[in-house]
Length: 218
Image (cartoon, rainbow, N blue to C red; front, side, top):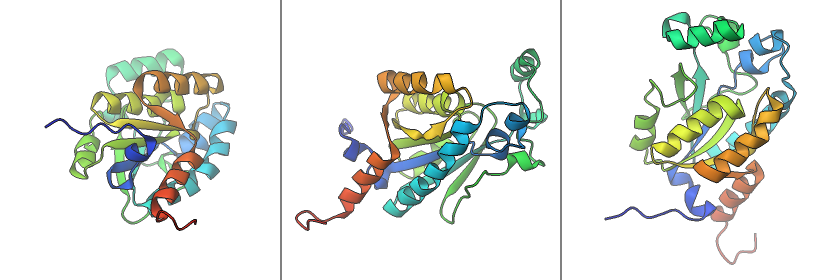
């Protein structure tokens, strides 16, 4: 029997089959004294986004969604030669998100009891991890994408998730990037080919409405 197609946003983000994926909210990507900050990259959008992300994750957790925290772990042992070559060509630091560094730690957000953590070594959180198995074992059909950076790891995981059969919902204001000119084009690309894009408040309103019995007026 064919699976039911989830057409509306309410159907897609029903908490019983929705996971909120928090990508790479780590010091090296977000903090002034992290690797990106020390390189002089523009962290303004990222640092403005995190205070919106924290209450959104709390709201999703309260609604009953699965919360998955993903952290990049880029010790040299995990890097393929193609990654090493790219970093050398781009003159980027090889000290990004090392397991024994403060840069690997979360930035202004922490998993709570019942949340799940995944460590990744590539842009997509599905590569070389048990994320797909974890989500399927929990009956997840939709991934709500948040975190850093919009046009790299958030987008890569979103595209990969779509290819694996998940509905993708990207939060436009709970994802951010240091390449500010690439944020909006990424949103447009996801909306066109891989999922839907909504502000966090819209998703919260859907969850809140689902909790209010019809006819109560509350």
